[in-house]
Image 1 (cartoon, rainbow, N blue to C red):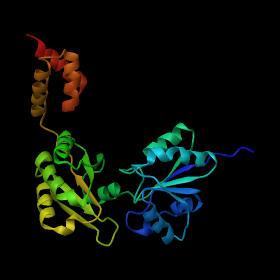
Image 2 (cartoon, rainbow, N blue to C red):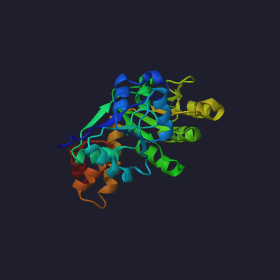
Image 3 (cartoon, rainbow, N blue to C red):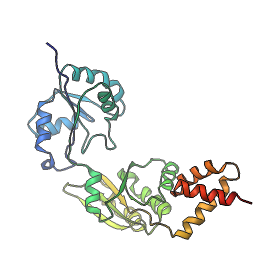
Length: 282
């Protein structure tokens, strides 16, 4: 008798308050043949608090690739596999992508049990535009790489969402203020849904200064939300396009120069090409 393939479940777990666990998440965890966890000790504690006892295997950034074959074997044998992270929604700055890709390629059904996510929770209370936003995860730990990443986001008009480690918060806010602008509005949300939940509002400079003087601000799980860049005046934008095109046209044909200028400035490619042709004319 042929065994049907199990399902791979991506299960969101609480980011602090156990009451936020969805009833369906508990059902899936209770029935899974195995739970693949970022930290088996932490997930074991969660299961114990739910009155559950399930087999656990570790699945983290250092072993995910090695785990794929054994987990696919379980799935093909008919077992359901539940993937959880330390807290929140798996694959959002957490392991699981390689396994989900492999399951999709192998014809295994992948299902989600949505729930808590620190990034979405922070956006919902930030009071900054939420109709469009960019999730950037963790910034690089090294200062030069961090500033380079931020420099690439200088003109991003959508709200920016970052995760940050407590020991790097003050340095990251300093770099954000220096790169994105000291008066840019931002929010630091820490320990969301937990006893010491705190949401700090201010400009990037104000928040950076407070992070230096207030040790509590740099404790726990942290999300930073930054408002997007204001659109530059049309004349300023046009001048920037011309400046970029003049440099590129020294060594590139108009079509290539226009493509690169469009990517660098956010302008339309056709508009850049038309301008490139005008600048190229003697």
